[in-house]
Image (tube, rainbow, N blue to C red; front, side, top):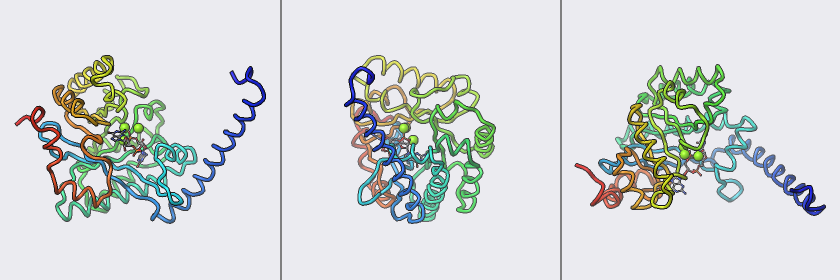
Length: 291
Ligand code: C2E
Ligand code: MG
Ligand code: MG
Ligand code: MG
């Protein structure tokens, strides 16, 4: 299309490439600094709710970066850190920080449940991330069933020896595996069965279609049925509305995560959120809770 739309288009295109290139390089440089000055980096935690009881089941660890006075979205900088390989070192910081936090919570009997850590394809294919995770868990005295890892289907597309080694190590230690953004990536169902993942996380794009788009609803109910057959649990992501909550609970979707319950929050805020305990009762109350 650009070919026919004249010189201005070319110029615009070049400028914007330039800008995104500069942005990329500056993010990589700033990330380098952030890794030596972890004041800029912070972990947030988003609760996951058991749809049967309304109780907190676990929390997903989500990285936050305060860069030059503003929050920058992980959706923007994680892919850049993956391209540059910085995700490996960043990932080590995330694992260490999350597990240190978990050890602290456990020592004070804060019931956060299972902590779920995102792993990128680069970590799984280019580093000993599973061994590092296990070593860190041992160091902090955390049992293997207190942690899950999540990664997308697309991670599994290239089955390198290193990836297989990491998956093998996770399985040997019974660390739960969750498939993130399920339904949006590329992975054969037979490989998924072979992998023996413990959780499927239905992508939020499907959840948004509840009550709006029948095909999204079919995908959700089929995913839940398949997961049951394969003895996997389902976590719905991006749950925001009452209608979505009751729809998913009626289909027996085991776990719910989304702004409708809680946004990702700091460790301190998660503690007070857990101490309150009202919120989910209110949201699930009436229609949803089975006793
Ligand atoms: P993800 O792992 O699929 O994480 C879920 C994203 O959905 C999070 O965005 C979360 O804040 C957002 N979310 C949760 N509930 C709702 C909701 O009800 N509505 C809406 N609109 N959004 C909701 P976030 O924190 O911006 O992270 C974006 C992505 O960045 C993550 O997607 C993950 O792929 C990546 N990421 C974040 N933290 C890490 C990390 O520690 N390591 C790695 N490798 N990737 C990370
Ligand atoms: Mg995730
Ligand atoms: Mg997700
Ligand atoms: Mg995602």
